[in-house]
Image (cartoon, rainbow over all chains, first blue to last red; front, top):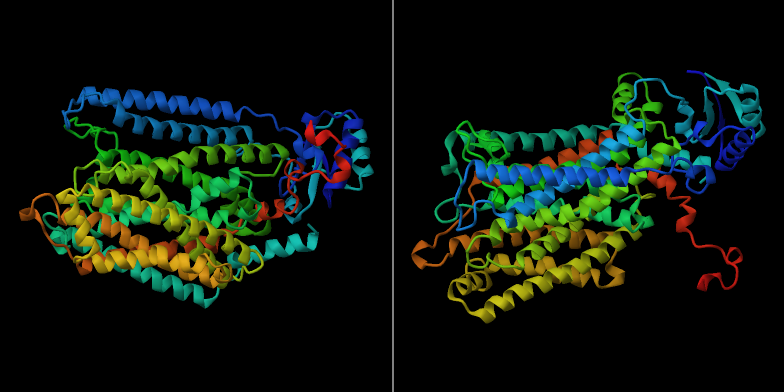
Length: 164
Length: 451
């Protein structure tokens, strides 16, 4: 991994660094901003917002619903137990299990999507500096094609340049 | 937020993880001993059989099921309140949510243990799972006990994940500030969290979805617990009102449990700067509202039964109003309504101390309520020849006591290893998203407000 980054004390300086990188022709997708808290008060905090997690969660819910429908119906037919004059396949009680497994499917799909799209539990090394935990904001570019322009943009916002 | 105040906040909230006093070891030893005694008592009960308990014909459900319903109710504090406050973006929730979510996770684990304790052969509890036995007999999906399994499993899974996800950034913080084994353990728990904008957005979206999903699940769990009773044609159980009545009671006892936990944390972990009187006042208002709602449900239930004047139901009605269970019933009314109402309705008394006293009363009152739902109805069924009597035996009292100790022990250990207040959420609260801040007058051109 080769990367250039700088650490900034506050969001304003980080915003200037991001603006400088954009002026230098670096695409938003190539810019990495790391902070110890969400920076929604700044424009750069809005980068990478687009996500399909809601759709994936809904799909997870549908998978849970289909599984629960199959499980309850198959079970009742596999071992038909007459109970309280209810039909063998009783949809009213089955709805309860179907609801619970629908929600479980949505919850598990949400967490799986977070792990995958949030790039958690990854094996390859990623750009990071532990000083972020002390409140610094990291702005950097992973594998920059024009390193001099990137360095100039980062230094222009007042950050000390680091290379990894 | 200035660097100095952010640093102080981090140090304050990480201090319990870094410093351990002898009081901590003493507390853990005391609570651990009680839990060990409880486990020993359970083993004794398994060895000797259910004859050691007070459970008898016709009162087959008693202390254990009372505790099951009580602990599932307590669990409603956390995730439900936290999810609602997250969805409405209530700023004051930030120091409260994790304290609350932890209660849910541990109370659910303890609550779910009681039906297993109540089994004659607890090692066969897995027969509740949707898995055929060696004779290919599948669980009966028309049994409310099977619904319990699904509801509690979903709620526990959801609650643990709802608790865990916002802890990831805090684990990363501890990882970066520690060395050696501790750094490796917290590093593993942090799952490689860095804090990129993408990760923050995904975490925020995931928490929104979890909040949306967990609210109906929480409501369903206690409704399904109420179905364990209301599906049976037993006097004063077979009621369409039981679902909402149980849910309201669960939230009521949950808020009380949360206030008690927060007050203890504030006192013993010196979190006065983060858990302010306003947090207790707000929760106190919620508790007052739930107290009124609880009184409304009790009145509606009692009036309907009294007006119907059905003999079997009136037998249970009178035994609780003026019979052998009357002292418990009226203590419950005092604890759940008179005490919290008379304290929390008066602004001057809605202090931390006032909220704690009211909450303590509510926890006792709600336990009594669960007992009064379970036992009087079973001991006074339709025909007088089948009436019976129940009184708890030492085995049941010991196991119940040990679960309260287990809850305290788990909470103490959790607050020793994880910041009990979410550090990143507290920091983020200092500069909320512009979307949540009203525009200043000079930023809003005339006429635009009515556009």
